[in-house]
Image 1 (cartoon, rainbow, N blue to C red):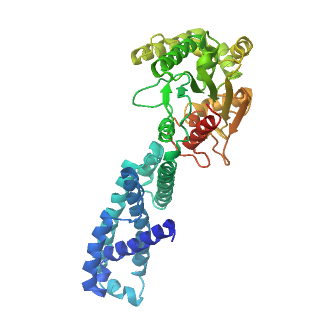
Image 2 (cartoon, one colour):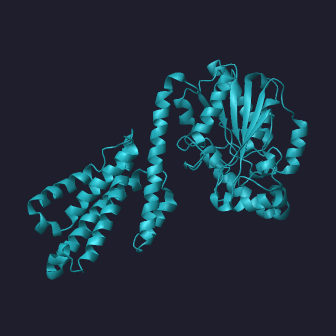
Length: 446
């Protein structure tokens, strides 16, 4: 019997227990059994489902979600009983003829249902990673609005349910193929970040991707270069990083996966003396190889004084965070279409290295979080379809190119491609995408 069917059966049975225990009507109808149901009600609050995923966090999510689903079902039954109490049906006659008993029954139902609700809500609030701040705030704001709160609750149950199913299946999949080590490439993976970010110790720029790769056998290193600098400066930093990795590990070469401006930085690094021989492949992700035309426009329209003020504030902040010599304006100017045109003519691909590229598109601005929901309109006006920052025509580079999107109105943003928001996107499993990308490198002998 399928687990989904068993889960639904579990929740329906437990919802009936909660319903019976929450309604004082059953004291008169089945006095001896009522106390049994009250004990079962307490047990349900501790063990709301016997079908559980693998990890402790997911188990907490599953228990919380089951309680909310059981609350929803039992609450509906309680509301039906409440309205029946105003009829002269035999089943409701005792309550109708005894107002005090009706009040006690109603208050009892509200109190016991509320315990189940908050038990479930607190569990998913503190264990789910997919609800997000927006959904949590919506739940708080709409929690006291009749009817609306039911739709919000239903959406929360669905989101958490999808999270549990996906995350648990990923654990099972990784366990089943652990011995295959499908991402154990001949050369280690060097992951290079884009502009305006750093390789922080406690916040990974690449989200959950590195762990997924390591679970499948990959060896991961990071660029560890500055967040914002000229392509030339960043390129030298990455070149030094490559030489250091090779010297310390004896790996001879690395496979590079670079995001956004990091792709340009790496292309420059490969043209430096003694570097190309230590690189097997370069995969650029969401890289503006043809530049961003809207960047040219903004740099001509925004007064130099304002540009300098923003740059000064940014550079000062990043100095404190560890960048030795951040240069905001140099980084921005190297993203223009004019710069990239000259760059592409000056720095051709190095023979003997596999170059490949990946890009994606957003289907509407609202699907990208700030500031991508703002820059999407600029990029679309100047360059057409884009990922919130880089246009579709700017992505392709190298021997092969892959364009990613999903059906519906969402799409895949510049940030989604590195799992920056740790969001599970329907039809696009970003972690599995990178696992398969690296697996193909291994299959190709890299």
